[in-house]
Image 1 (cartoon, rainbow, N blue to C red):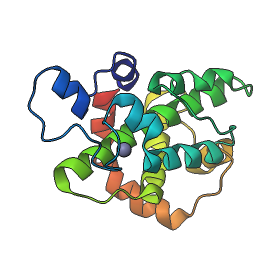
Image 2: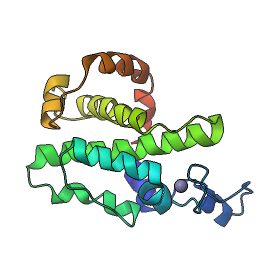
Image 3: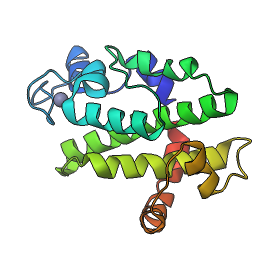
Image 4: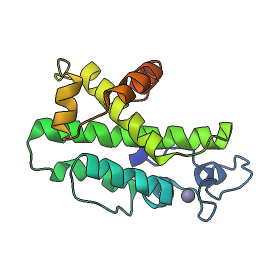
Length: 177
Ligand SMILES: [Zn+2]
């Protein structure tokens, strides 16, 4: 569902609402306050969210990638050469990143919450793990083997904290996808 929305440019960003004549206070991105908020800006151009992607890429040890269009990020996993399992896992991380960015953007716009790059990254690790273990043949994967697969050691305290906090939102994620 996330992929479909990106592909068809169906996120209700400020510019998309304006195109449909829905009154919006401003079309400018409320996070960087410099560019028009579009799908491509939000997911590939907004500086804070570009930082998120760079953290995601270094977590997954894939080369940094500066996309011009959001949909290009959706095919990036196809370039991975480590086999289908890793490709699938990386794709789950990419979709989770879209979801987390969109969630952070909504929290900022509607609840005036600060955008914390590190916090978004932590959420992505936990949510992609929950996603993978709930939806695929990787259901038996332990957290340890997940972080091994993604080649990162994770602080278990952080996981306990975020795991509890975000298990509530898992159903929302599953609805979205
Ligand atoms: Zn921006």
